Length: 221
Image (tube, rainbow, N blue to C red; front, side):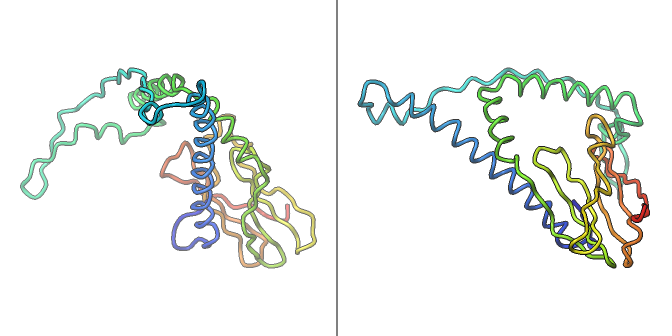
């Protein structure tokens, strides 16, 4: 969940393991969905020739018509060289430029239409969701008398940040990014408690942007 040299190793490793768990779930789902279908195809009336068994079924992919992306006639000079940069206008971001927002919407529409036509997509989604449906915790971080840690009940879109007073104190949800937006576009990025555990600084990320908003909360209240 965190990135950068000043952040706890447990948080950086947690992000790596999160991606590893998702990749493993996808691989397991792939085997579980494809293997039964292949077994049914090969069952037939008993014996299947080796040539027929090894011949893969032809795949039919949905046709894709990509929207045209505007190319600006922007050329800059750098160290005596002409450097074209026709897509610089896309650096403005979807929140600042209506043209970029419309471009992103068209790209998302193409992706959604393509993905919706893929065979077995619903089976993959259901199996991956089931494999990831278990309670998960990060390693705790101690600050003063308090312990801070991330927790996901199973199918939550994002981990919530919890705190407890001492090892035996009741757990309390301190920050829940799942409640910050209806579409899940606001994420909890970095978080660091003060040495006393009284204060906690955290950063919010909106729609995957590189920009962060840093906030401070009083842990006691």
